[in-house]
Length: 533
Image 1 (cartoon, rainbow, N blue to C red):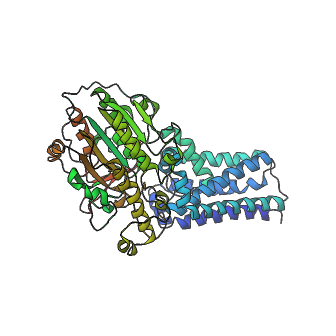
Image 2 (image 1 turned 120 degrees about the vertical axis):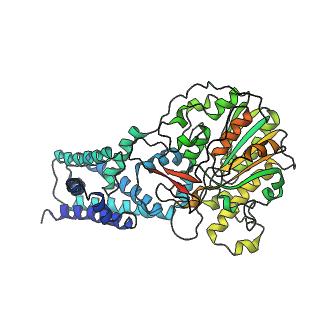
């Protein structure tokens, strides 16, 4: 039968789709699809027709007469299938536009980490892609059917049907659609929903008095769960040096990060966010004067020391306009500065050198941190001194604790190795988000856009200085619960009238920080079970 290989091609596509839907059965069932369309049977019929037509159109690809059309479509299909299954294997969730946003902002910084941590999942996804290639090559060689190139219109119609669905739903449509068409549709629509990247507004505000500190240093770590550092929990001996200088700090304990992802938290801090930016529907965080502009107006030199990016690449929603107000811009230059093991040690030394040769500065320090894979952040065979403690923990927890000790505690040990804190300088330390640390299963450690765990938002917050009275007096009226206090305190210490803002909910935002459409979802995840979202 001449048509048997055409039928085989269509059945193969259908099997791949059914396998994908099986993997996602815990997050989106057929019943959920029916409930979504329960008031719109006509729309449901349209969705089913688009889905079936798309599978049929994709099944025609091995039969295209034109080799160019065949190989182009094969390449697009394999890339989409491998990417889609890779994401599902890693997160156990479907891929959405918001995930594409996060990838665009973060992947050039953390792609090596992603490959190392999820090597098995990515390998299985690539194997599926290879199986797809071999299957289609086999079908094309065995089949004597070659259809006219004009049949490619069916594939284009399928793509535009999927694109239309995603466009009408602001790229939030959740029921399954073929990955070969859905992922390109997300990429096509991303340009319509990407955030503002232009110049910032001019600053009109003036400081009302002289600054309280000669230097203010923001130290923003990465992936540090506040529950696991010694100053917050003496059961863990992860940060003994910090514990030894606890009398020189105002420790706010475990607070909530403003979001559960690096880019969104950092732009909230950089853009001086407040309650009205949760979420930021008007993109004020991207348009209003940033912290460097305020610092320069207050008479400070400005410095940005990053251990995360290099080659003048900007991330965390930063643009070239943000750099205009930065007097000293540093990214890793040497091999050791770029090494995950040595990056934070080198950064601490660089910060010390900067403070030695400069005064009256506001410094934004972005640490490399303990981003997954955790074993990548410390020397091979390195382990905490407390062996009895380590014996009671699993491999992943041990890796995370080793990383905290080597990257976080060691940073401060190098910074204050002479036992003194720089005179008239305030160090403000926190992390961009928390971290899920579990022994079993595949999971995203942070940045989950649906149903995140509270550990993703648990971060440390403390202040270090040789003169803490000014800080203590200000904070005595502020309940510690969120990153936002860093912003109001810093502006106050710079000499601006920055009254204590109303208390934030004790939780973090997940989903869209910059929603462009009413369908773009966001929510607050509480750190306390009694808080009702």
